[in-house]
Length: 478
Image (cartoon, rainbow, N blue to C red):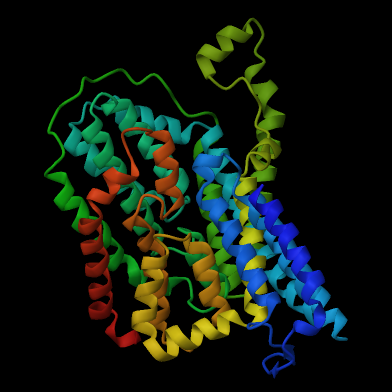
């Protein structure tokens, strides 16, 4: 209702003010542009984005998927821009600009689609479930599980996304300590911090690192200079919180699950796909998504093999379906298209909306203004630390895309700094990252905003320590 009312109000503003209200000052940079920052067009676009992102932040309460408001805002913002430019005789400038944004999105979309498909394939082969059950039945103490789940979150998220990693580890914590609210709350905070920190030192660990890598600003191996700062970011708060974890030993249980046929091969193919993407980018100077799409072919061909050999392997004479299921546990043939269909389509559409919205605001001229204030007047160090704090309130994806669109002149060390802060800054609040928001839903009532906020000073200590360590060990890069 709010979006509809805003749209109608904007329409009335268009009629009342009309096109002549647009400022006619021209700026350079890729061709002449209309200066719309101080016009009703700029203000309306800002309002649209703020309202749309308000709905995104309220998704937990409205239950409206986050892609819907940003898709609408992106269309309306670029519609306004296109209308204004066409009315002033610039018939192709907006088209060229929006095509550039769409190309950036297409590369990100195809890359993520392949990564999500592999994660879904590994989930379907029961790789994650097997890991979860083994941890649950191991009989570790709460304190040991606290460290194990945090450590696994840190090291799995650089390959899988931090959301999937956090959900998997949270399932372990809930299965073991569902009757101990204090343990679940502390363990979930630790998982969120660990998953976000682990994703900061790998191009595959977070959308922000992926965007920086695909942009060609930082090469693949340079990201690993952030490994030690990322470890510090997680270990400092984890060490302090661990003293509050009850040292209780839950009962052991019997492990009664095994991975499906081809699980290890799928993991190997995913590793090959990552190597292909890195090779395409580093040695052939092609977009990483081309390597990922080539890697998708690996999975498709292997999936074809699994499907063709399924009946031959399991259709043994004298075996009924129930017996086959008991012995093999794999009575459904592998279908790669089901794994593609299970990709996070709402998230992928959300990225489209965010990139187009921020791209539109940048085309209007707002990003240049922000860049002048932050990276010229404040300086890159203060600006990049502020980016991390801002990402705790606003999702780090639009924040990082805005920084990339500004493209400030920074040293490699400062580019790594903003990659680090944007990745780990979301840990300061439970709503600051996708992992935190998801775990509030999964562990409802046990992991809460207030519970996380109680430990924010400790997490902030880790945030500050990781930045300090980065300046010390990577001093030659500044």
